Image (tube, rainbow, N blue to C red; front, side):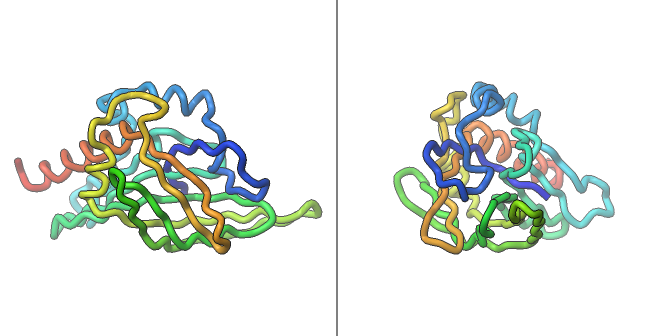
Length: 197
């Protein structure tokens, strides 16, 4: 299990999640991709007729070592209902993050979503412990559409978010608009195929 989102945070405390870091060379390369190029990095699973769900994931868009963040859509093949999620895999030293809340901007309007921790593990050595947590937060489709609007390549073309854990300190994260737009295009193609259009 892993999770998606591109992050630019400069002066974070040492206990910050490993996904909150300065942009890497890989991040900068991903920022130059067009929406069409981003689409080619989106994964689709569950295409067998016997699979109850089709899962569209942007996990392959920008893979991180250790911690990760990505968008995921769960499409119910019977009803056509879609659940849109941010999947977050965090790695933290010292203390568990215990994610609870995700805040994000839709245009200039702040919105929020509850975060559910779905998996947890801890590994300790004589030097201390490291905490591994998988969490999800849901988005309304219309919020993602607004965040992806006008998507063009660029390191500053991002949707801004913040994850809050057991403390009041929030950790900033960013998703590239091209990643969001490419992800939504792939979801829409899957929905069109299911409806026979």
